[in-house]
Length: 60
Length: 542
Ligand SMILES: Cc1cc2nc3c(=O)[nH]c(=O)nc-3n(C[C@H](O)[C@H](O)[C@H](O)COP(=O)(O)OP(=O)(O)OC[C@H]3O[C@@H](n4cnc5c(N)ncnc54)[C@H](O)[C@@H]3O)c2cc1C
Image (cartoon, rainbow over all chains, first blue to last red; front, top):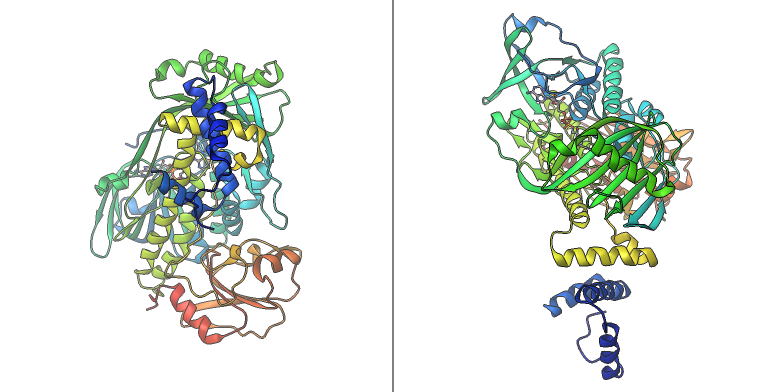
């Protein structure tokens, strides 16, 4: 598997709203912590080190 | 005059005058500076192979204070080969349950259920002085059997000069200075290595800006034999992390990570230490058991190594060559592996069987191992003391998640316990024609497995071994002065099959004297084995 940078999320506006809602009413520190947890959860779900490495590069 | 830098707890080798102090200068094949765990292991290994080893130590025995407490399986396997392992395991504490806390709460618990079919446990907790004493007693036994080992206490090396074909050593004693010469000098003189200083060699790396308070307490009360580790401990003034770990004799090791800006003198006040220890001990049960402070100390840690472990006729082993933070217990454990890597090579060189170029492979293999150990202990230290805001955020996210999801637990790093290096891809190793299990691939230390009433590693002693497994044809192989002992096993335990054969019906392994696999094949091929032996001795046979 390689990293997908093409659209892959069904109903993107909906997802984006959910993402922001998850951060509502959080302090900066709480939001940072949430993001970190989210990244770790997603990274584990992906698992594939090649994909993760490509994602780190793509995000830079 | 020889200064006393520390108190000794076991007096093992009291100063005694020797002829060489007044007569003509004597020349020794191998002089080892330092009788710590590494120097003693090296002397024992060399002596058992018949190469004379002279150890010079500026004290008369094992230093007070536990220092190292965790000794890993590979170290115990080496000690067993040297005849010192049983006593260590008998005396040591084997533990399985570990608990990891973050602040008030326990985030998870693990059980190190050991893999079956090994003589030695995954590791034991044992005070370093006991470890050294066991090695010393094995040296006495070897000496009684004729092994040419000598230890001189209160012999402080004060000068080292290297010439083309010898090393000149100046030694101070309670009765004044004397000189001796050595073909080889092995510096096992610890992290502050005077030998390294005298030769003007550098020791670069990273200093961790942190202080650790170490308290060994003797507790009379019952307390579970578990390892407890806290990130951001809730008890007052405990610092960034804390550790509680059991040792023999009802002693518990307690560590507090105090940070960088501290008043050392104040932190060493017994009342202050006691208030920290009280808070830790009562955090789980609400009560403080009765205890005594046995030994306390404050440390800072560094991760660094010498650029090269060999400098002509002077070689460095143990802490003199590399230093790691203690998370993962990689100091003494890796130092003992240095000793075992060096011993057989030095033996071949001293006996004139191999050219001295073989010793370069010691440096290359163990420099690689040091890098691995430094990498591991640096990562643990960085996890425990996040250096930036974002690394703190990720670290705490890992800890939060670990409490609720198993996936995050392997990311929690309070030290990765010492495992031996695999010398993958190093020039002294040969082919993997068997394509067998990865644990026993060329470069790897042989995994143990049951054999008859005993274990495999107990059979891999002396020089090179040709291990034949299964009903296959095999003949002894001999290459010039390198004898290869043939060990043919046909009654194979399931563990032996799983760890060495995979799906193959037969297997041939060539194994080094330090129990690392050189090469392996599905069937006997004398020419291939001879080639592998030449490779294994670095093409240095003379
Ligand atoms: C708090 C703490 C906890 C640790 N925990 C662990 C652990 O759990 N597991 C682990 O594996 N490691 C651990 N270590 C590391 C371990 O203690 C060292 O790696 C180990 O002692 C190194 O052994 P060595 O023989 O190389 O050197 P040392 O033990 O330092 O021995 C050097 C010897 O050389 C002698 N010497 C020095 N200068 C001279 C001279 N000029 N002439 C003659 N003799 C000299 C010294 O007196 C000493 O006897 C810990 C260390 C500390 C400080």
